[in-house]
Image 1 (tube, rainbow, N blue to C red):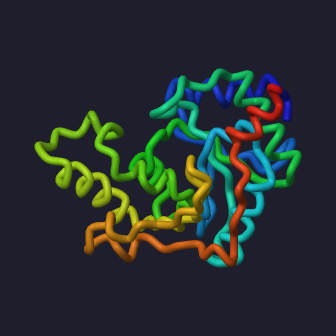
Image 2: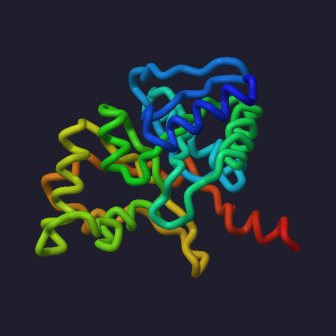
Length: 212
């Protein structure tokens, strides 16, 4: 893709003139939403085999169309700059995966943009769904009402979560904790079984290795 055109598209997403763009290959992009989206969101710093195998295992499980998704803004990190986004798009497309660029940092915003989707997440991200610090803009008096409002939005948008287990900081493989999920939302969540996907290499470990 012409780098000037790519820069213009990213700028329009940053300034919220357009909500997202789908990038398929070097010279192909679209603003149309495909059906049956399977979305793995992240910063992909870097994009590695763990991401790839996780997405392919989930595609086999769900028969949905796999996409990576990068949000320019992030609840835990600084916003991405245009040059970084361009590099990430080129990197992912070089691995023959399509990528969505959006400005939707949380799953409630993603569900508004991509209703009916399945969000593929690791167990660490699953746990963050239930952390109150990510919902400071919610005018709720209690923890439970805040989490309920968030999950209600996602449920109303007919989205689901497929959760893959992860190695935690103690090098223990952890999977979805069903006790965290309020009963009315249990059908929104399913687990990608360890026998179908397990990868113990994290982006953090890869970055540390590259810096050594």
